[in-house]
Image 1 (cartoon, rainbow, N blue to C red):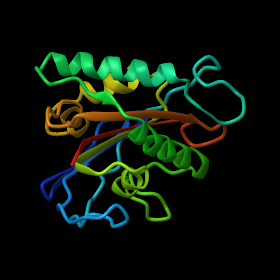
Image 2: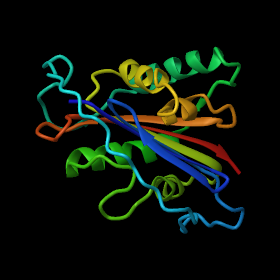
Image 3: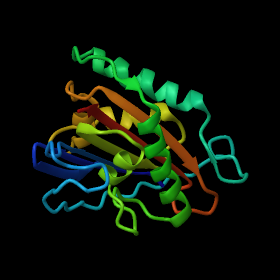
Length: 205
């Protein structure tokens, strides 16, 4: 089973949607007065449930062992795939950022362990809370999430291959105004989707 959601907010305008596989994406530009500990004010966001696609993971795709984050190579592979697509549209390459990776890993791990799939955690943490908590002050930020995919290439390809009007992940991926990115994976045996992926984008203040 695979899922993707996207959440997108730019200069106060938020668009939300999903593709036929489990993905999710979001972007936001807070006011200049927003502090690191305060969630930027945003309109209500409505996420449309995506269609669940059945998939049988193999032991090679999802090792049956204790929960673990992906090796660094997963982040590198996701970055290479993302920048390859961006170059086709003359967007500058994104730069790997440790703070965004920290925020992304926190969310992938939380979704996997607590068995949910959403941008906002059951405790009320938003993408913007997590990015600020990691120490990144942004003028623009976005998040794509996915679940049930076996490789980082499969996730990035799913984001890119969306078609309008349900192409929020693709728009985040190809947003030339974004500068930094963090990508993280976490696998939890027995969770609804097994593998959970988060891609956090941002541009610093």
